[in-house]
Image 1 (cartoon, one colour):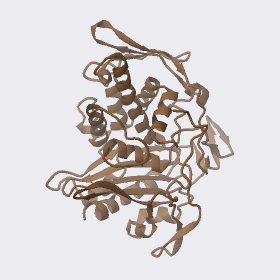
Image 2 (cartoon, helix red, strand yellow; image 1 turned 90 degrees about the vertical axis):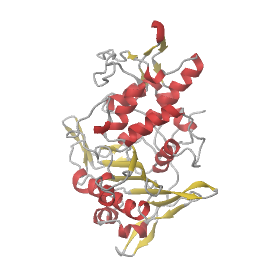
Image 3 (cartoon, rainbow, N blue to C red; image 1 turned 90 degrees about the horizontal axis):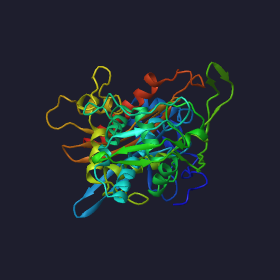
Image 4 (spheres, rainbow, N blue to C red; image 1 turned 180 degrees about the horizontal axis):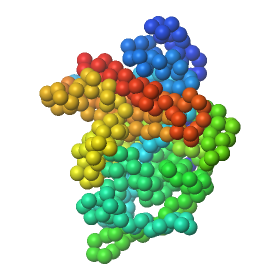
Length: 418
């Protein structure tokens, strides 16, 4: 698939168009032509005080919300009914929510290599990650892998989904490579995806397009060599609002200008949700080709995105350090409606969150097993009152977390419980 010269986000409506009577103010309702998104603004009047407070300042908070209910009808295919508020109105930094792209692409790559070389079980094969730059060390062991202390794709996918492990994402980034990673997403119709860099890695973007050599251990002492690669792709975000904040810290130096996110990782809210739909509900029709994954790999990914960290046997995560809502921003609100102590099967949340540079992103599928109702929730909010990035002074606990908790409660009460 030819690489686009720059990723393009879906067009957004910039006019203030929907009246929220309860607030008495106009709020941006972004509904792009042809995307069949019903306006959500008026419904948010019942979504709780933290949601309303964020919505009142929707533009400075860069609030975006996309709700997709699965409509099940006897004798008819299941379909999505979408409601949105400011969907893709501007750029948001996806942070760790973009890791789902790497997990999907890595499992696809493993299946492609299995077909090409007549192999099986590549996701469980040991990986030897070679040094890429001066000062890098060869990576062979993973002490968190209790089974054999080796690096494997399956184990990295579990860590990435369970606790949003950055090293796991970076290893999958190297396994697939910058070019193939982006092409894999674009071939699924997710053309807004820009994956230009690893996470928690200070190297510049040109260096980020390089990928380390990897040796895959096979049975009988054999191995499969994946050479080091240098990607020719130069992708940039095209959404408006890529200059963020008033200043940022570069080391100890305060740079008094906005931070430019043009070349950083990016994805539209719609594409982020569509990728999750392709993973969780391949029976549903969304733009682009379906995601082809083996049943084993799909189960691996779904399980890791659904269970709580404390429920994992390998790797293990103590509940005191990794509470149930560690990677589930909606969970506190959902539990107000569906407490864990209630009889019967618990509600399920399957997804991947992200948080960095003041942005908090939720991309999850919520399911009520009691009645079978399923709802996809994808939302983003920016909380940075002082306007300075990299100073670690973001209102995550006071604004973002309550926003997602109230949103989770509202969805559970008005979309899952009825």
